[in-house]
Length: 454
Image (cartoon, rainbow, N blue to C red):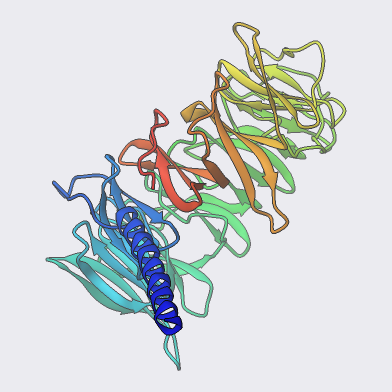
């Protein structure tokens, strides 16, 4: 009888364990298995992670389209409808939206350059190999090159770094050098042609060339800010002093300042001594304030200061207490605050005390209080991320609130900063979170609807 009892007890324990394992497996399968399909290669699918078990892609309805436990990282699908995925051996591959491998896991780094071009690196025992890859007729054609890095294509040209030289030249879409590698590399510059012009460096001096390698601006400057597609004005330095050019590289403000800020709303901050700052209107070339503002020392809550955003700039006269300046050069508040974050034309966030913040409506003058260690603002989504906990290992835990003070998805903990990603013209807010003891990554759309939730 005793033996039968023990045997029965063992069977019972095994059955319970089996049920638990089956339940856990089913829960995993339910959360992390394909449950949708691709209707068209034009469908938007976003990379996500599922319960620390697998990485894959979901559509905008939250259906899982692709998933694999072999993928340690998945990237956004590029304009050619291909994505780069990484396995747990840190090898890269290229897939299409059906999950078919266009290039298998043989390479140590794959970078998409635009226009169906890829820069590919393969580490070998004796020497690293570099390739320019181009997609054509269902496959990636590889051409070995002597470039240890290739920048994004722009205007039909891409800057390349010649192997073991740190010199910059430019190739065409056939991978041929069309501008010789005689220029110096600066990792802070994109080295791109914008409107057929590029900022380049020669013998330590900055100048500008056109796409025929003709010098447009002579090599005499200490620095020229590389133009971006949206820049109206750019900074430059000559003989240790700073001025401003337009985006055709014509001098607008002569180099007379010790420092100068970035342009916004046609206004920049300027200083003769790096101690006190005024604001200069680039159109009228007139100062809109006196030299009374200083650098902000206590900048833990200040994202940008002495720089206009949404018609306002965060400023300080004593480096600690903060006020808000409008584009007419007038301060907004009669009293100063410990910190100010500009959200948009309607809302700002004030730090009134340690761990106490106020959402302030500039039109209605209404105030909504929040308590926390810090608050991050995501203006495109009208959401506040309130830092509630900070772990010893550096991880941060945020709760999300709308501008009315309502929590967005109760029990959801968001870890660390969220990232805004623009995909096919729409903004998505990527986050890593935890809910019901399940760790995952997903997105909010522009209306703060969550794309996928375990």
